[in-house]
Amino acid sequence: MNARTPSPRPAVPGTLQSTLLVAEREVVTQVRSKSFLISAGVLLVGVLAAIVLGSLLSGRTTDPVRVAVVPETVALVDAADDLEGVRVADVAEARAAVEAEEVEAAVVADTSADAVLDARVIALGSAPERVLGALTVTPEVEILGDPDPEFGIRFLVSLAFGLVFMMTATTFGSTIAQNTVQEKQSRIVEILLSTVSARALLAGKILGNSALAVAETAALAAVSVVGMVVTGQDELLGALGAPMAWFAIFFVVGFVLLAAIFASSASLVSRIEDTGPVLTPVMMLTMAPYFVVVFFNDNDLVLRIASFFPVSAPVAMPVRLFLGEAVWWEPLVALVVLAGTTVAVIALGAKIYERSLLRLGGRVKLAEALRES
Image (cartoon, rainbow, N blue to C red; front, top):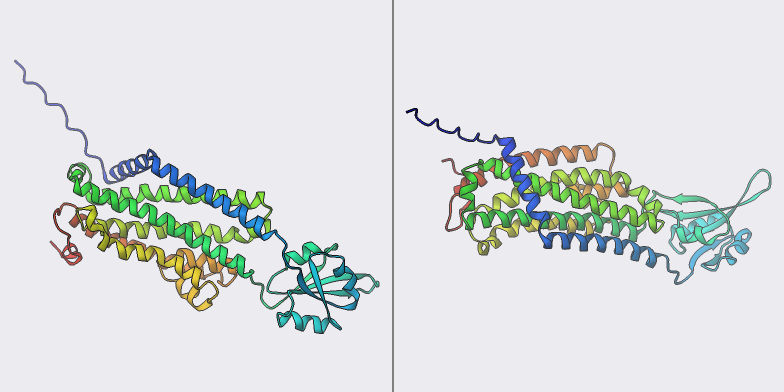
């Protein structure tokens, strides 16, 4: 009687295949979660509502805009309901009033060689939209000093970049940490590690959640673009084009950096109740870029330093690009520094993750996780 031929053992998946399987599991689990879908929907609606509301509020007229006028342009300014003319003797006095910030702008006259009288607006920093919109003619604009976004726009753009990065990184970073601890607490990690390596498990978690974070950020960007187009903020949209592209690049690398820190930190504990002490420093790192660009958005020195610091570069550098304060080579250098730091952190985090996953019970000290076996 012939002996039964044993059935072949299933092939062990390679590192790449294991990573993709874990990433798929992370994505599917999140997408099927009602809480994830609801929070993402609320965030998208909130962003769109904020853009529309901001446009409506900025369009409201309150007090008339004070502008300096020379004798030739008094009638032109008096015909505009939204302007209050401050009479000056000549163009030199009008320019001095603008530079002293006594008025928002000046409306002066240019007499060309063919004796045609043209209006010209003199402003400080940026073109005054309310003044241009109130005039019945389309004047030439003269900017005194370096062009600079208005404070309100400067603050809102800084707030938007910082808030998107902080909320997305915090949401998906916390998900990575929570899943890691839950797998240890329920001992599912032992089953997972019998099929895939610890490095593949870490890489899959980072890859899957990075894909979700990028997708959510892309959706936010699309909603923002639609909102600005519908509300007629084409000029702001044009100014945000290049900074948004750089933000997307920096965001991907910066999120991978934070994701590796979240995962490796969470692997040090075995219970959800113990995650506070190990995740608090990571949360502070994640929130730091938001506070830097919001509170120091008008401080060139602080923003310059933050734009080269790996954790804050994904927010600070796009803000500086929008403000026109960064030269062409600076984002390239900052990206190289960020990428190099990310590679080093992933290598270190993989070592911590690999040596801590199967150590159950109390909290694993960082020094123990880094110590050679």
